[in-house]
Length: 423
Image (tube, rainbow, N blue to C red; front, side, top):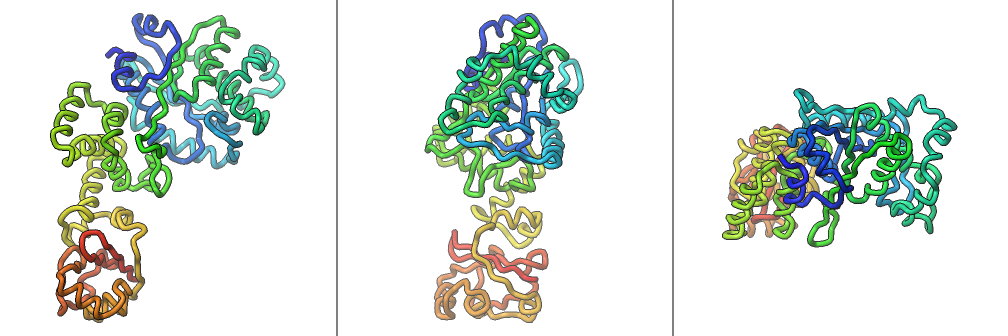
């Protein structure tokens, strides 16, 4: 696989230093991406450099994923308008362990092109401050450092020495990997160009070597909103932070203007496969063929085929036909994720098990409807469902209606949901 052309047609190449294509033509090359432990999970924005490493390995090269035990202590100012809040050591170690486990999902750690994960704390922990500013800092001028966009944008509002020094620390990472792992390429987002080229300059000045930078464009959404965020915040890789259902729904809801870009970046589908899907989508956009292909592919790879099946089943609760049995088959966490934020009422299990006439249940007991009269009208209109099953005026809500012994799902029409929780 031609790595550079692969990035080009996928829309993943923003810039690179000259000479890389000639280097790659000569055989196996080692390249790396750095990840700072700002959270205990990667989010989908981090998947762009992860996918660069995946394509790098598929192209016959060796990938290194660097987790920033040292750089995480400093904080990268790139793209930030204010100082980052510094994390304590214990939190950084926890975040590193979580991120390392996630990175191992995507890369192959065996064979001729085996990946590895390194932690820059391993070479910085014994580095004394005076030694660093003497042996490393003297090679990079202040004029060079202040010319970087990540610094220039912050000079008026102010920038601590801690963040100002970040590019030296990241640059030394590249030098260390070049010297000890024969690593010649660093990848990152376009906002990382300044930090990466500081590393290539450090390699030139300190080691007389030659190294390369490759960046991907920062992803934007057609409507101007930030990629990778929903109403609840970041879309995380960790299923405990973003459920498989919500993860799947994020991609299903991608706009037509964005989905062709996303399916190139976040899947391993070939150009020919994607162009066929695009033609099918264009013929019938209402079927959302591209969105479904994208959501299914990335949910299965990031989570599992079983989680994909769960996410599709959870989606059916809102947009398809379901039964009490199919609802109970879902993990409780996924069920609650689907209905997070809908109005709720709390009843005791004893109240439900004694049996409640549905009119009283809808009005007096839960407050889902404002009065018994409104409840009767809704029931006569055949617009009320309990656990996705239509009910009539003579229905008695009882313990048999409890999902997993704790929940009852009430619905009026297609979109008006209400959740009853029982203790």
